Length: 86
Length: 134
Image 1 (cartoon, rainbow over the protein chains, first blue to last red):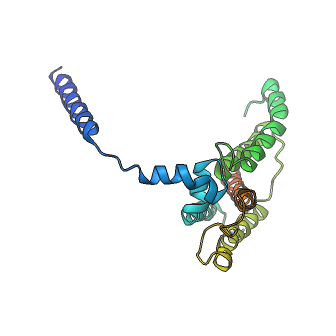
Image 2 (image 1 turned 135 degrees about the vertical axis):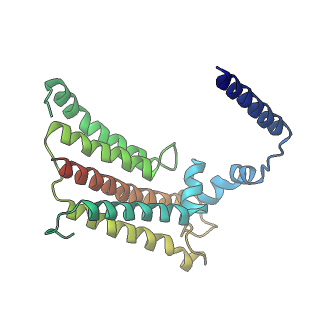
Image 3 (image 1 turned 60 degrees about the horizontal axis):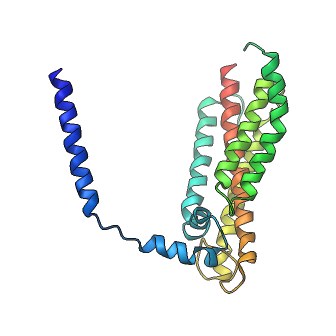
């Protein structure tokens, strides 16, 4: 019982401290505003997420695809039998 | 696995619609939420349904792995052609002064290639696990 009360008090303290920080936080909106204003004209994509992952950060999605390739080859390597080789 | 008549029937009906929806998500990736990865995952789900129906379409995973490898290399090549037109790696290969409709071609090509690659990769993982389970 005492443990639960202490846990709840700690959670409330953490919540209050985080929310008090969030009120004073100054978020830099530069990237968001830039994408919102220029994303459609520079990339031709109405979906800004596609604009980011296929134009501004294309290398990121390339290596994401490469990660999937590595995963597939690892799974095949683990599960293959000894006689068949891909 | 116990075979249910209703499940089999519903899966047979759903299969073409899931395929169409997957291609829709891939092709409309630059207009609406979605894209290559999400559409590829939906396509892989369509193939997963064929195991429930017990009509496996794709038996040979060697071809799938080959398709995945070559599509990955094609993605890298298409992404690197921008060094000839814009002078920098890994961006749109259409020059900056062209209109938005022309720039869409690059997004379509890459979304389609990424969708093919992700779907073949996930189908390979599923097929490997299914074969292991048997």
